[in-house]
Length: 216
Image 1 (cartoon, rainbow, N blue to C red):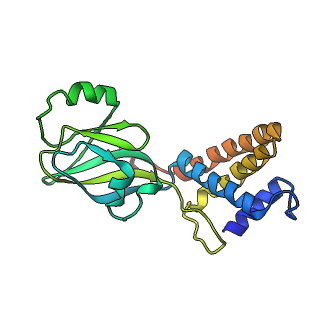
Image 2: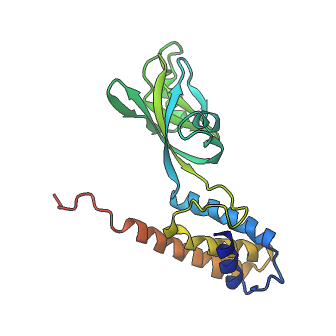
Image 3: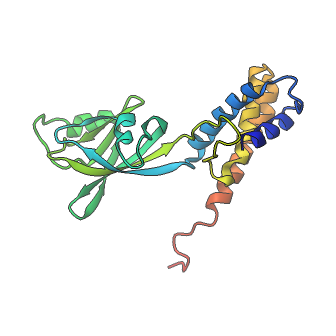
């Protein structure tokens, strides 16, 4: 897949013979573009299961915590935490998303109060608070968006779904032209085309989803 991306990007930037950009330079741009595609489309959204919330712990480092779940070791690939679902008896309870300011004011007032958490607040770029403080250990699922592992050779499997792969070449070309300081071309041609392609790919992926096929 990497060779295909390299060919596509070279065609876009009119450098088919590699006279201006090396493969290493474009590979970096391609991998940066893949991260951008994953962030923009949420195409690598995944539920990480079997994460234990310890008793009396309210602050969680997202990367460390997610790495303890199943599949394991995904913490450093998380770029967004969407929700946390807690197992409570035979129920799954989704924590409400709040700003930390609101959660701090409403749910962290009583320092010794513990019960089943029901609210999630991000703090900084890589940590979150779950409140109220857990009164016991709870099992949970974390709904996250992941970045794809970098392509290092043509043998590296591509994890971005096929429908979103056409976006990669346009953002990679945008980065290559930006580094060249061809700013007008980078923004007016390649980034604009990326936005158009993103809209088309998102429509292709989501257009057939219906809440109820019987329209009830």
